[in-house]
Every structure is written in C-alpha cells, then in structure tokens.
Image 1 (tube, protein in one colour):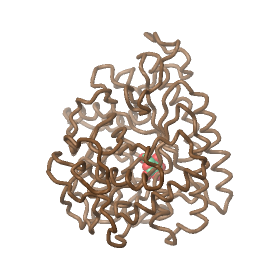
Image 2: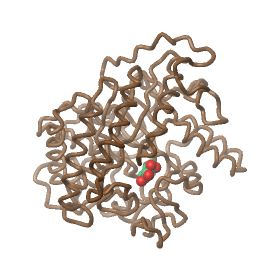
Image 3: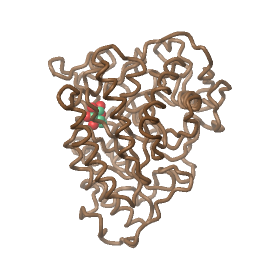
Length: 460
Ligand code: BGC
C-alpha cells in the first residue's frame, strides 16, 4: 500500500475535530471534544484501554486462537472444516448471530496460520529467549488475510475451513478478517503496491470475473461463520485528495468508484461484515477532505444499492497514526484531528451529514504503538521505531461506534521495497524514517518485525 497523505487544504470551515486532545498517556482523549464530532462514548482511558471490556476478542486463556499450539501453522488438521478433529462438540453448528451487529463481539478472532508461520520463521532466527517469548505471544494474535492478488484467492477456502473447524471445536463464534485489495490501477498515488490489474488491459473484467466472483462463491459457501471484509485500502481516499495526480486519472476514478460499488454489492451477505477503507487522521483529517471523502463514500454506497452488509469503515489501515496524542515531532499543519479517536468521531459526523449516520468503525492498531517516529505525517513506509499497538479487541471505547481495534496490517510484512532499482520502488521507502533493509510490499521483513515486537506498546 502506498498510503498517502493529503496536503493541507483550506482552513477548517467548521470544527470537525475538537482539537482538544488533552491529557497524556491515555488519559483524556477524543471524547472531550464538543465540536461536530459527536463523541458519544465516555472516552475513558482513551489511549490505553484496559482489557476489562466484555467480549474482548482475544481471550488470554490458554486455548488461544491456535488450536494446535505454537508449532506449525495452527491449522486444525483436515481442511474441509466439516468434521473438526478431536474434542469437537459443536459440529451441529454454533449460533453466529450477534445481537449488536458487531462481528467482533463475543467472538474468538481467527489467527491466520500463514502469519503464525511467518512469525515462526523469525522465532527460528532468534536466540534471545525473552524476545522469543514475546514473539510467541504475537503468534496468538489475529491478523487479516490479504487477498492482494487473484492467486491469493486460492487460499481463502482453506483459511475459512480452518476457522470453522476451530469454531466447531470451541463452540463459540470465530470471526475471520479478510482484506479485498486488487482494484485495477491499484495504489494510484504510490508505487510500492501497484497491482496486477490495469484498466487498459481488461482489468475491470478480470477484477469482476477472476477476483470478486470467486471470493463471493467462497464466502457464500461458508455461511455459518462471521467474516469481516476490509474493502480496498486507499482507493476511495485517493479519489478525495489525489485526483489528477500520478496514476489517479479519470479512468482510475471510474474504476475505483464502479468496482468498489461492485465489490460491496456482490459481497453483501448476512454473515459478511464489510468495512470500507477510510484513510486515517493524517489524510482525511482536514475537514474539507473529510467532507469530500464522505461524499464519495456515500455516492459509492448508493451506487451499490445501499447494501446492508456495509457495517462501516476501517481507519488507519497499514498506517502508524496513534489513537490519541497532543504533540508530534512533525508539523500537524492545523489538522484538527490529531489521532484516530478524534478522526473517527469527526468522520462519523461527516458521514451523518450524508445520511450514513449508522456506520461503525474499526481502527488498525497493528503498528501504532509509538509516536514521534517520523519527520512528516505523510511517511507511510516501514517507519523506523514503530511498535505494535493495542491488541485486537471488541468494543474498546474511546470513539464513536468503534467496533474494534484490529491488526489489519500484519506487523512484519513490509510496506514496500527500499531497493531503488526495483520496479515498485517508491520514494517514500527511501526517506529518512524508512527502514532501508526492506523487501517488497507484503514480503516478510524479519528485522522490522523484531523492532515492532521490541517497541510494542502496550508491551507484549
Ligand atoms: C501489500 C500487500 C500485502 C499487504 C499486507 C500491502 O502493503 O501491497 O501485498 O498483502 O500490505 O502486508
């Protein structure tokens, strides 16, 4: 992903964020605002929610989410999912309904066996016993399964089978999170995550027929489990701020609008909870950008027929912005939304203005544990000093209709290569705060993973 950041536009015409982010170290927080942000929650412990919440997604108990323990990939044996091995006593089915509509609530969050294996590769290289223990804790944390190319869809059925097998084994709803990320002309304002599909080469047809259609079929074949789908990171936000620049052409705009609408309408199923990517505070945090973004979201959702399965929006995906803070090392350029809590409150208000006042949010907290790690808010590539943030958790509070903290970006996966000769080299991956050892986007970056573990906040 090439997260970009929008240049400051006009002065705020209204106070979309309170700007009063008061307090420090998790005190105070976004809910103090009185502006248009309609902060509803009490804002207790905004920065550091204690894990007292009911139905927190990540049980600390020994069962964890990895049924087979720490070795191996955690995949329950047998991939059909029809008959869980050993101890399965809910083969008749588990009631996956959620009274509140929040798919994270009361659920075990599925741990991606592929991520467990990647972390294992780092454990195998690590001699420091304390660090190994911390890494083993990471192996129990749920991260998203990225459908970032057509070929990745091949692994989806087995992934969901494994989640279902676990659900049958523990007799409790298991929620899996996927990311749908293969739009034609993807990553139009950056290079690092340019995709495989191009509009001019039949990319729209391929997106529909070879990507969305098989995903739809697989999701439809797994109706008895909760599936969260994060929809096309960066795409609609790029239309709000970067049109006319780089590859964000009229053709790209048409494809993004129409294909996001197509995706959300095709994936509209009762057990699939969709969250459309809505950038982060350092991108659409300025009121003008928010307004534009909300209008685009509304247009696209309407064009899709207002699917009930669009639960809301995902913010901070693959970014580093903290939940709340009052000062940063970079110039905040009069952006009134300092952190993600403020931003969610403000975005909720902007969405209400366009008739989307019922939407919910999730915040990616995979790598936002530490601030003051970049010279510019716009730096998005493998920032040195980053640490894992809050663990995935349902109903953490702190901002309007916040369904969950979640690790959408698997920490340890690179944001983009630092190899200046690579085809997908992006200048941002060469800037002073970017780790210069980085492999291609999505590839495992052991050294960076180690840093994220060591810098985790809260600590592992
Ligand atoms: C990459 C994807 C990858 C994802 C998760 C993105 O930046 O472009 O290929 O799957 O990150 O690591």
